[in-house]
Image 1 (tube, rainbow, N blue to C red):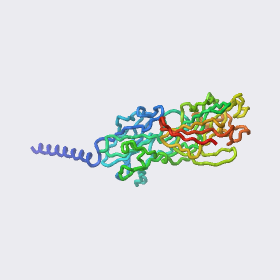
Image 2: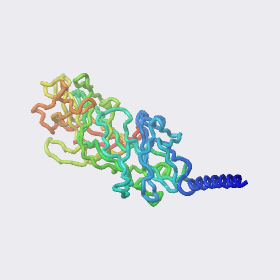
Image 3: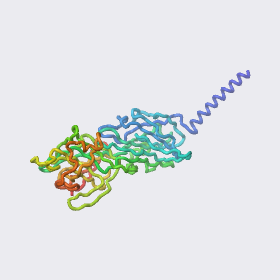
Image 4: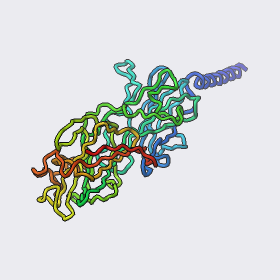
Length: 419
C-alpha cells in the first residue's frame, strides 16, 4: 500500500514539474514557436534576376537580432540559404531561435554581418551591425550580384512571421551612346569608369531602443511596420571608401578590340550589361579656361576610332588608322548615384569627340591591366592630341536618366548643358 502511495506521489510530482516547466517557457521567457521569416524583394532587378519568383538568386541571407529591451544581441548571422528563400513560405533558417517576451530588432543582408558582442569579458555591444569592406564587381555584366539589406522590428504577438523586405543597397549604371555628327563615323570598342569607389563598409541605421514605432532613422528599410511608406536612407550608410579602382568593359576578339559603329539611336555600348556602383556623388570641380574642359573626380573613358565621311582617319592619328584610343568625358559635379536606383548615362556625339587622354590600365574580366596585350589599342596618343584637350569640336553631350531598379514608364531626366 505504501509503495502505491509513493508511486502516485512521485507521478504527481513529475506531472506538476512538467507543467511548471512548460508554463515557465510560455509565459516568462520563450514562446514555444520558433521565429520564422518570409523574404520579399522590394524592387526587382531588371530582367527578373532577383524578384519574388527568383529569390534564390539573392544567395544566402544572414540575419542578426538585437533585444530592444536591453540593447544586447539575441543571435547573430543565422542563415537562410538562397534555395530556401520564399515570399510565401516561412523559414526558420539553419538554426531555430524562439521568440522571447520582448521585442526584437532584425537586421538582414545577403552578405555576412559584422557584429561586436563581447570584449575582454565586458559586454561591448554595437547595435549597428555592418558589412565590412564590401567590394562591388568591377566588370560590366548582367547577373544577380546585388547587395540587398532589410530591417524589421517585431514582437512575438505582432505577427506569425518576420517579413524581410530586401532593398538594394547599390546603384546600377548603364553607359549608352548615340552619334549625330554630320560627316563622321564613330566606332566604340569599350568603356571604362574612373574615379569611382568600388569598396566600402555599409553600416545599418540604429533602431529605436525605446521600442518606439516612429524611428525615422530606419523606417525606409522596414516593411510591415510602415506599409508603403518608403524613405531611401541607404545612401549615407557607406564609409571607408578609400579604394578608387577602374571599372571596365572591353569588346574583345581574341587579343584585339572590336568596335561597333554608333548610330542615331541610343544603344547600350556594353550590350545588355551594366555596372554596380557603391552609392556616391561627384564632388570635385576644377574650373578651367581656354579649350581645356571642366574637370571632376569622376569620368568615363570611351575607346573610339573616328573617321570622316571620306574615310580619312581623325582619331587616333592616321598612323593608327585601325586602332582605338581613349576619349574622356568628365561627369559633372553634383551628379549622385543613389541606392536602389538605375542610371543610364547617354553620351551623345553631337558636338564633338570629347577630350583626348593617354590610355591607362584597362580593366575587364580577364585582367586588371590588359592594355599591354591588346594589339590595336593606342596607349599614348600622338602629340597632335594633347591630354585633356578637345579632339574635335567640343565635349560629348551628356544626359542622365534615372529610373527605379526596374524600368518605369515615366523616368526623371536631368541634362548637362553643352559647353
